[in-house]
Image (cartoon, rainbow, N blue to C red; front, side, top):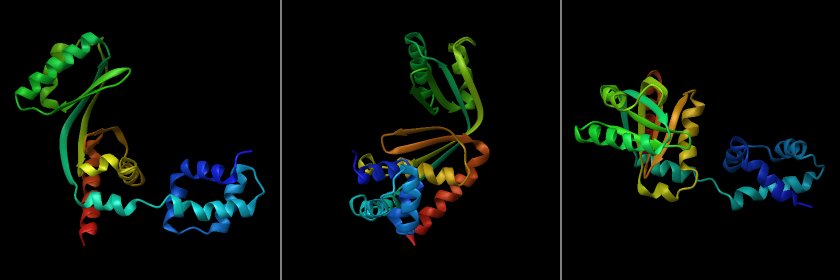
Length: 214
């Protein structure tokens, strides 16, 4: 039979809010143990309680490291962004490469993400003509306009900092900001959202960085 400690660890790993509260030491262990007992359908109170108490010891919070990386990050914000998704095919990938070259060579900003179903081009609205010249209506799967692009450029250490992207994303989520698309490139994290959310998102991270510096 699977050990209670393993089942408790599995429960915590799929409930990040509970896990963070446990790591921060702001939960009542007995109350949480009773909740977990019901979720796991077990009556082994002492075993569950012991597993909860041991878990933070072997899985400490990384929030101080997250904040340390955030303090050394910078924000970039771009407006009037469009998001065009075309069908994924060798022919369309070639066309996308040509569009990328055209926009890049004239000093424009463009990101390309290839997924299993489509190829996404993220650029500003001034470049929409270059895209429509290459792709017909049958190739275009979706078009999104009036978007903003928020980029958090962090130190290279985040490549090995487990959960950093999730940490940043959770801050955006709990503040009620809906993200249309997220991508992580090297040491930056890009969030595509409705332009109306941009000011709020910028203010949130600016305050967090100021508090970290205080």
